Image (cartoon, rainbow, N blue to C red):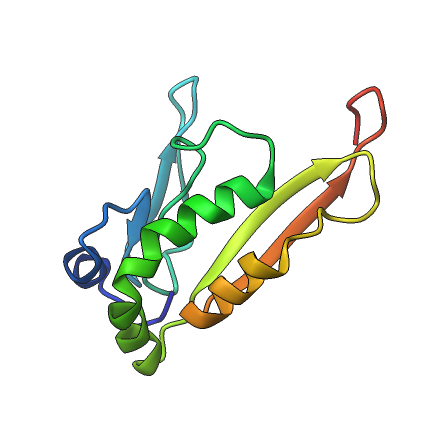
Length: 133
């Protein structure tokens, strides 16, 4: 993510398809299931993102992160070039469970992400045994 990011440059450099992309200034327009079109404020920064959701069938966060790391480690030098240009990179993770604490991650996963310059953030939500937040 960066105000000047052109997601096409990222796609070409990494040789990986994004799951979401946009440039700064692009309109944020969506259509609901009932067909209503809504418009929010334009995107403030360019974004290129990929997700493990479609490719990894596991409830375990570390399994998803291992997949993402295996996709990105072969393009380490390209990631470094983007980081040198001021582009921020992170793994934004969603977690929900009965514990008030997010899942712990093996040191090996954190070290691999650190070597790529990628921060791991976990947005964790505690749910009760019945599945309610």
